[in-house]
Length: 472
Ligand SMILES: Nc1ncnc2c1ncn2[C@@H]1O[C@H](COP(=O)(O)OP(=O)(O)O)[C@@H](O)[C@H]1O
Ligand SMILES: [Mg+2]
Image (cartoon, rainbow, N blue to C red; front, side, top):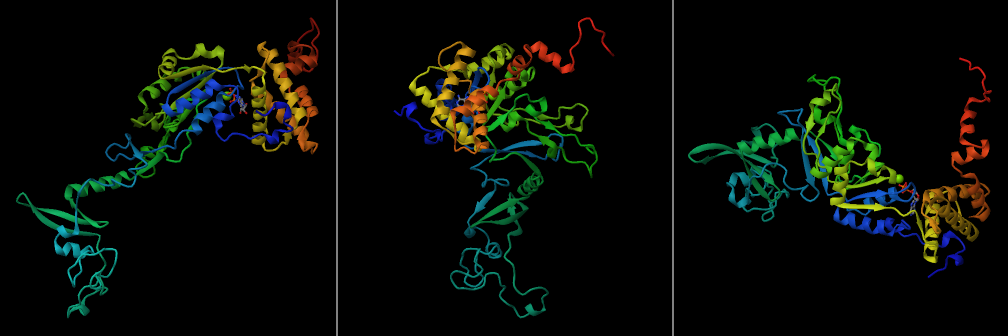
């Protein structure tokens, strides 16, 4: 193993490609994260800020397979305010368009049909590929009429187009019925009147809106979401009832986060702050689908409703330890029943392996930032010392802190200092400077004014005399 001490700069560190391996000090979380992405379970992460909860949620989303379904909202001609949802699978996309109909070989249809559709040669009567304009066997032009003595008198071009459809009649159960032969590649379909009606219905249905496309992201955030952001909406149309200038309801359907996260991860930070919306979230999780309706009672959208819009997501939720109580009990038991609850680590033992991980973390932060130089051995040692101090200070533990947002801010500030001084590497001095200057406001205020109370008084811009009269 490489020793932490022997590393001369973070530039030497190889950063793993796997986003889960970039998460340090949370081995259990990473193990479970990998598992839930395969098994599609839910996950509740509990722990203080800056320990990698958001990072883990994103990493889980990034290792999920690409969405296999596309979701469309179709116009419903009979009831426009009840648009229809359609889920298309990536594989079946090309197939079944139009009603299922009888499909025949060109040999099984009347000769005049196969002729008009471009299969049968008018001269030698043999069948060949309809896409080729001349007969494969005798070379005759399949689309040219055999010229008769009166052809010159006919209007229009002497040649004849290959037809895609031939209308005719046939006898069925003693009745004559209208049918249409239609070219379908190297086969011929027979369409009855009923099929034709279905087909035109489907044409009407072709008024649709794709609300979830195949190439959507698998990571969707619903932190502090409003009801409409979480569950979707149907937008208001001021001309809603006007047949000419109003827009059809299906065009106004907007998916919510629960839908956008279909097949992906729905990340809810500060879960308890969703309040009563947690109940809806639970329903969406259980049903794996959730209706979209206009949520503003005074809007024209409120009369519109689309049922059964898919919402099959992996829930990854995060809370601080103190907010666990604010999670809706049935939602929590749902997560437990079909997933995991996990407490994040706040620190890790100070040993050789973990120091190396901390250095890997530094390298990651520097590379991801892109605007700061790498850190030299002195800077690395200084950060490790800072991580020890913070573990003691915040958690009362000996070890290395895993409140890494703190360290991330420190290394970036140190990097800015190094960059502005045009240094090739971040040094120990830069890190020391950053540690001194990256204190939270509370700490700065106490230093400047002696206490938080005095600091808050400073807002008035003058010192109020004891017993002095207030103006105003
Ligand atoms: N365990 C970790 N491993 C690597 N980097 C981390 C870790 N925890 C936090 N970080 C760094 O700190 C930043 C903030 O972490 P984040 O995931 O947003 O924390 P949380 O969601 O727990 O508040 C991350 O973008 C990452 O740069
Ligand atoms: Mg976060």
